[in-house]
Amino acid sequence: MRIVTRPDFDGIVCAVLLFEALDIKDPVIWVEPNSVQKGLVDIQDEDIIANLPYDKRCAFWFDHHYTNQIDTPFKGDFKITLSAAGIIFDYYKSQLRRDYSELVQAADKIDSANLTLDEVLHPENSPYVLLSLTVSNDDQPDEPYWNKLVELFRKHDIRQVLKDPEVKQHCQSVVVNNDRYVDFLKKHTLLNQNVAITDLRTLDKPPGGNRFLVYSLFPESIVNLRIRYQDKKKEMVVVNVGHSIFNPNCNVNVGLMLAHFDGGGHRGAGSARFHVSKADEYIPEIIDILLKNENNEN
Image (cartoon, rainbow, N blue to C red; front, side, top):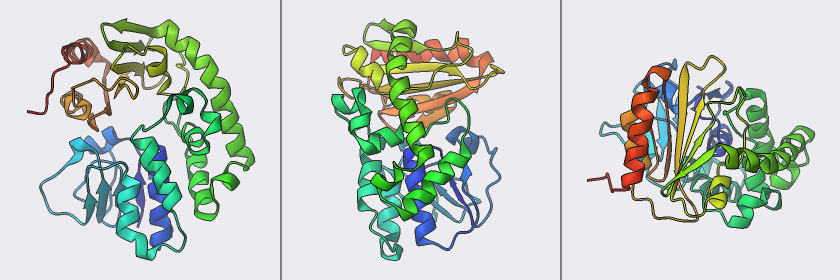
């Protein structure tokens, strides 16, 4: 039995809960949603998929993304709710030996982007927010670190986790990079009406950073489109779209929109990965939809 989940804070908490509730010995399989959508992941019949699209080969599935809803019967649970971790917590609550309610509440808060301006500008003042910003697959995979966080949270609360030397180093880097990322965003973000477009494709190594910062720098924007290459080969383009958490006037269901561009996600945030040959077609179409700002759920 294996846990298959994605490398973000919600995925970390999903793995913690599943390890604690079930007798799982195998390491976590960390993958991106696009890889599951395209059938690139070797899903086995005892696998538990969490926070990712459904695959009929799995034993159990838990998810909360708008575009991942299915009509076929399955074992597990699906709800449009704040986090996948919250769904797993409710499903296996009686089998958990420790109280993970605070950790799950943090996953709910962070995955739903229910953050204050101070938490965005100064994540160092909010332990869970700060730690969540250390979990990213933008730069390069860091599976040993993700696995370490899972093990730490199985044993300790957030205060003890933050004392770990490696975690502390990652958190310190986040604080330093947060300041630098402001300059990158200002230089590489264009405001087109009320759509903030951050294009990092001209950079050989795009910086990692706080994905919510752009909303504080461009308060008139209602949505941000972030574009980058997946890696140095520049064969795949990654697009992230998110409603502003401070100016909630975007009417577009982002996940539903990106489902037409090899992606998916929530109503307020989502991502897509596609071959560079599609960029000249896909990106202008996405921008046009965001500029029109029409409800696309009908």
